[in-house]
Image (cartoon, rainbow, N blue to C red):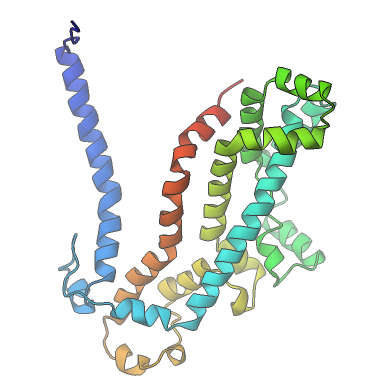
Amino acid sequence: MEHAIKESRGDRLFTIINYSVLSLLLATVLFPLLHVLSASFSSPQAIISGRVWLFPVDFSLEGYKTVFNYGLVWSGYANSLFYAVVGTTINVILTIMAAYPLSRKDFMGRQFFMFLFVFTMLFNGGLIPTYLLVKQLGMLDTRWAMIIPGALAVFNVIITRTYFRTTISDELLEAAQIDGCRNLRFLWKIVVPLSGPIIAVMALFYAVGHWNSYFGALIYLRDQGLYPLQLILKNLLVQNEFDPTMMGDVEQMAQKAYLTQLLKYSLIVVASLPVLIIYPFVQKHFVKGVMIGSLKE
């Protein structure tokens, strides 16, 4: 017969405080999301009058119709998707190729190369030298300016290196070498298949970074056709640079002074939706990958 351990008064008090704090944090995070989502489906008049809280008021799809009639939103979506997919692929490949040798004890000069990596975390050339370098490489106003300068994040290399060192044992490497397996084949056939969690985490880190980035585009890009979605969103929200000629009956709609507020909420939902869709699929790998990769050696 099992006997449950009776909780002390201190344990119950701790549980109550714990649930109270977590509930408060959940409400703090959840309320803005629900408010933005509800506002995007409400009428402009309801938004301005402050009648929208958790549920849509005077349900309307007017904001989404206007957003998707705006040509730059579609090009921004396509550009952000390109930067996220191609950039993340390059990021993950380079991170694995840098982290694996640094995780090997028999890699000559491992400490020296690790020092060089860490050094770049503390000291860098700054904005102007980086801009001049990108210019000298001929990447200004090209898609590569959004991908190459940030192709490798040292912090992610350190996490991945620690994951490799923790999960890929020396005995596994020795057994593979006895069977004639070379380093590249060992990396591709054994290390990569066993490193799904950390690869998923790195892909999520890099993909979200690419999807949310706009500062690089602000510095390096002049062609609006190359702008990522976030930069277009920034121009619309911060500078109100909404081009009336890009929409059908915008002149009539612009007469409604409330349209701008509605567009802001609709654009925020449209820009955030891909990340919210992807995250649940990699969440199961997230805790395992980050926790093992961040273990202190």
